[in-house]
Structure formats: structure tokens, C-alpha cells
Length: 220
Ligand code: Z5A
Image 1 (cartoon, helix red, strand yellow):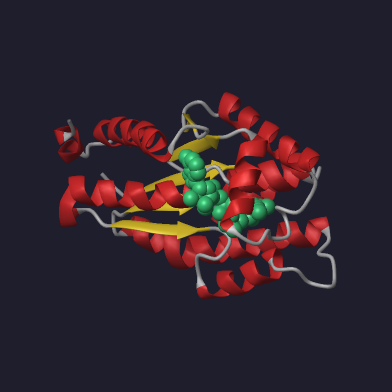
Image 2: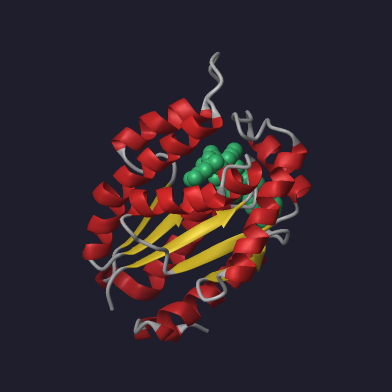
């Protein structure tokens, strides 16, 4: 069957962090110990990545330029692929990853306006060609997502940028979903937590069953 890279994407406040843990618990309960299920995120999925995450998301006096920001996300990703994602996929794990290459297209491309082809090339360099097997897009209204993120606590650097930026990012995800139908699925993330989780479980069940994880079919 091989390992599978399952990515959770979307604008902030969509509920990725909440849902990824619920999905992990559900997958473990269905698949048992035979299949390792691991959760990770970008930026910050490795030791180096944690340092890069601090640079990227914590308030600093010096503004990070758009290209420097792009390259920091790429450096985080390169390390993540070589030191975490690929080793776990080689162990046939299900890797649940909070954000991946599509975030760079949406945030740095659609949000900041950096050339999309340049970002695609950089993604290719950083990942060595490793693509997600399934991308679950959390489609939440920008205002709802931002108000949830605000309630959760202090805003980080990107959350503080203007609403128009978040709308462009949202547009980016919508266009990616429309043009990458073979690997993208959309969940309505405006709904309550349990209803979002139900949608995710249905997509995971179908995806995993299709890829030979027959244990998953024991779902009511
Ligand atoms: N970024 C980038 O620019 N380029 C890149 O290439 C990459 C990333 C990889 C990472 O931030 C930042 O990096 C991100 C993009 C940028 N921009 N920002 N800011 P992060 O990892 O710190 O955070 P995030 O990915 O944006 O996620 P988040 O804001 O933490 O949101 P979330 O994980 O989707 O949601 P949550 O934490 O699960 O939920 C937020 C709150 O809402 C929380 O209080 C929940 O209890 C509540 N919640 C969750 N679901 C619901 C529902 N369904 N109803 C009501 N309330 C809910």
C-alpha cells in the first residue's frame, strides 16, 4: 500500500489543528497498530523548522521581505521532507500534515503576489517532487475563520495582515481546488466541529479503501 501524505489546507481558523487530531484518533481506532499514523505541520515539523517558524511567525522589529519569507518556507519544507515526511512514508505511515506546498501557492503567490511559476519551481526543489496524495481543503468564510483564530489567542504576523490579503489567499485555495480535482477534496468548514469531522472521515474512508486499506471499510 505504501505510505500516504494527507494534507490539511485552508485559511486560518478553519479548524485544521482541531480536526487533524480527531482524524488521527479515528484512524488509529479503525486501523489499529499495523498502520502508523503521524501528525506534523509546516512550518515547524523539524528542529530546524521550529526555529524557522519562530522567525516567520513571531513579531520582529525587522520586516521579513516577501522573497525572504518565501525562501524560509522553502527551507522549512526541504528539511521537513528529508527528515520527517519521507522517512515516515518509507515506513508506510499515514502522515497527516497541517499545510504543505499549496499554502505557499495560496499565501505567497495569491496573497503576496509572487510569480506562481517561480513558487512551483521552488516547491519542486524543496520537496524533491514529493506531492500530497490527498489534500483536504477547509473552506471557511474568511471572517468566520479570522474571528475563530482571534478568539483562540494572540494573532501572529500573517493573521494581522489586512482582510484583502486573506481573501486573495482564499481565492488561491479555491482555484487550486478547481484545477487539482484528482487530489483535492473540499469540506464545509463553517459547520460545527463534529459535522466537519464527519465529512473528513467519509473522504478518508473512500480514499483509503481505494488505496487498499480494507480495514477502513468496517465503519458504520
Ligand atoms: N504559511 C505560509 O504563508 N506559507 C506556507 O508555505 C506555509 C504556511 C506552510 C501558519 O500558521 C502560518 O503560516 C499561516 C500560513 C503561513 N498563516 N497564518 N497565520 P499556524 O500553523 O500557526 O496556524 P494556521 O495553520 O493558520 O492555523 P490556525 O490559525 O491555528 O487555524 P486552524 O488550525 O485551521 O484552526 P484551529 O486552531 O483548529 O481552530 C481555531 C479556533 O477555532 C480554536 O479555538 C477552535 O477551538 C475553534 N474551532 C475549530 N473548529 C471550529 C468549528 N468547526 N466551529 C467553531 N469553532 C471552531
